[in-house]
Image 1: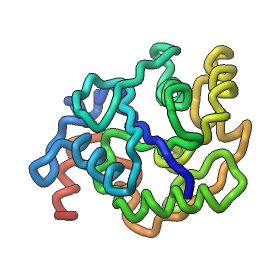
Image 2 (image 1 turned 180 degrees about the vertical axis):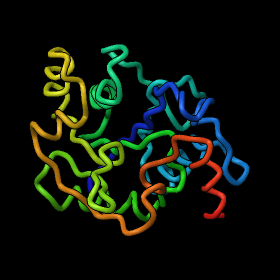
Image 3 (image 1 turned 90 degrees about the vertical axis):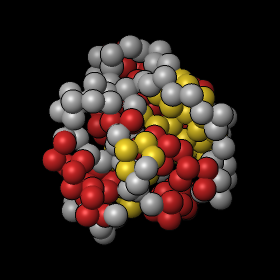
Image 4 (image 1 turned 30 degrees about the horizontal axis):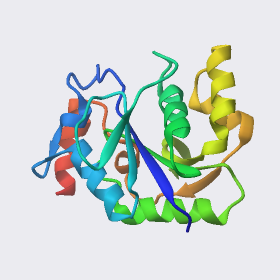
Length: 188
C-alpha cells in the first residue's frame, strides 16, 4: 500500500451540538486526540487538521483557500497541502471509526481504479469518511469557483467506489447532537 496523508475536517460550526465537537471527551480523551492516535496507529504521518486551531506535534494545520465553502474547501486545501498522492478524509466527530476500518478503506482504495473511495452504511454514502486522490484538487477548485461547493458534486463529477461498513451508522457518520453524543456511551 502506498503512503497516505489524512485530514481531519473540523471546520463546522457545531451548532446542533452546542460546542466544538473536536473537544468532546470520550474515554478521557478529546475526539480529535482519539482520531489522531488512530491515524498514527495505521501509519499515517502526514496528518492535517482543517478548520480548527489544534496544536499537536503529529499534525499540521491547513487553512481553506476558499473560505466558508464547507467540507469541499477543507478537502481541497488538504489535497493541495498533502505530501502523498491520496488523502484519507475523516470528520472531527467520528472517534469510534476503528483503525482496522481506516486500514480497510485505504486498502480498498489501493485496489480500485477510482480516485475516490468512501464508506457506506445502510445504503447511504458517508462521503466525509473516504480517500480522495490529490489529482482531484483542480476539479475541487473548479467546483468551488462555480459555487457548486459540495462533496456530492465532486463525487457526481468523477464517481467513487464504496466500502460497506456493517456496524451502526453513527460510528462512521459521527455524532451531531447532544443525544447522539450521549448514545456513544453504549460503545464503552
